[in-house]
Image (cartoon, rainbow, N blue to C red; front, side, top):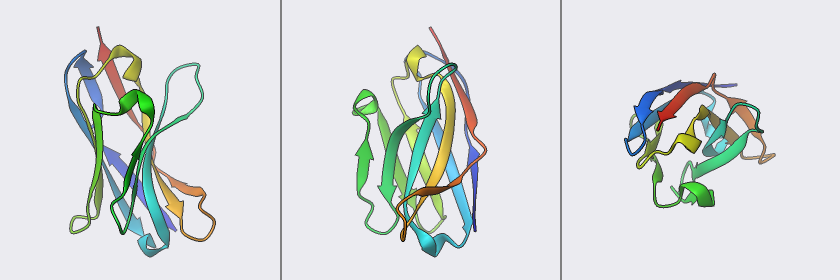
Amino acid sequence: QVQLVEFGGGLVQAGDSLRLSCVPSGRTFSIYAMAWFRQAPGKEREWVAAITWSGGHTYYTNSVKGRFTISSDNAKNTVYLQMNSLKPEDTAVYYCAGQLKDSMTYAYWGQGTQVTVSS
């Protein structure tokens, strides 16, 4: 099992920045990649960004390219999502997720952290 704990949500104004952190623990050797998802009220959960655990390759959904940066600090065993130029439409609960090596499914999820961007 892998446990994921997120930090860093909050209320900001449009144009501000915010950094989310996710700390995995447990059987982290089973993880292929870490990702951030988000879910806005009344909408489905949306994949936002991902980073491979070993190679550090990064991927983004189009709506956040150039504004968000996913990174990892293996020494601290932490994954970050740096969010710049935030927009009201970025308002959502953000979830950290771990993708398994064997099944490539997102089997592990954090509890979620609220990000609210006011206009």
